[in-house]
Length: 291
Ligand SMILES: NC(=O)c1ccc[n+]([C@@H]2O[C@H](COP(=O)([O-])OP(=O)(O)OC[C@H]3O[C@@H](n4cnc5c(N)ncnc54)[C@H](OP(=O)(O)O)[C@@H]3O)[C@@H](O)[C@H]2O)c1
Image 1 (tube, rainbow, N blue to C red):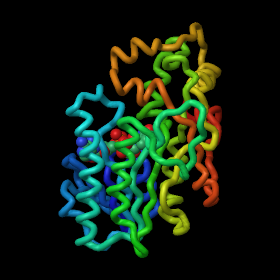
Image 2 (spheres, helix red, strand yellow; image 1 turned 135 degrees about the horizontal axis):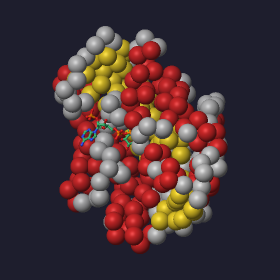
Image 3 (cartoon, rainbow, N blue to C red; image 1 turned 60 degrees about the vertical axis):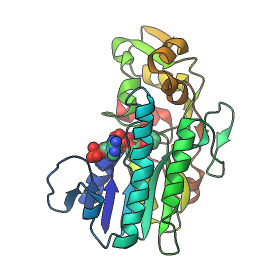
């Protein structure tokens, strides 16, 4: 199988590419970095160098949402690195030949924030910067869908990995005996273990019945307080405290409200209906494996 992965150097992409190479795939990674191709792994820096005859594309590139405070300039970069790149990628594939399957990144931020509702793939877009970003990103990806090209939109929750992304940051204070959460901690955290994230992407690639929006989350979302309890059950805890919302807003601005102090309860109905089984369906199993 010949696959193009954009964002293949990132947290999810790296794990995905390594697994694909181990299974004998030919992988091309689109990257801004100067990296040396080797064996079945090819790095390209421009869309014009993307090879012809791809079977599949996994489109994960994008400037990190939690990497920096959201200045107007950074918000532009967040949007451009996803929406414009996806538009250019689809245009390039039209001339190079369409893949059989195109998996495109999105996020559970699509649904907006809500503390009471349970979101499935049937729900529409919410409001706010993240919701608009995901909706516009998905709209660009939808241009590739046809009878011969299957499209899957990966509405991804918070990916928990021991070495990168949210988990090391969310568990930092626990190393010093402090169990902490953000704000009241009663808001939802719809998460997925990195192993399940990679397995679910492969499942979507390989199962021709899967198409459209797919929530990439574990079946049992938790509140931030419950997450903190799962971590502190495995560490000596001397103190428990919530980080005051006001301080977080002052430090991080709009990003604190959209990403850290609010959340959404999202369930992976499409994955489960298609027959996917999570290795880490609950937070205790995930935290145990990551710590
Ligand atoms: N991790 C999560 O919890 C999570 C949750 C929801 C959604 N997602 C989405 O899933 C995708 C992959 O997530 P990830 O955690 O693996 O991301 P990541 O580790 O931040 O990697 C994203 C990759 O995108 C490329 N990139 C970064 N800034 C860019 C820019 N300005 N222009 C073009 N490319 C840029 C980088 O590749 P190069 O440096 O090689 O160019 C980077 O390796 C992202 O689009 C993210 O929004 C992730």
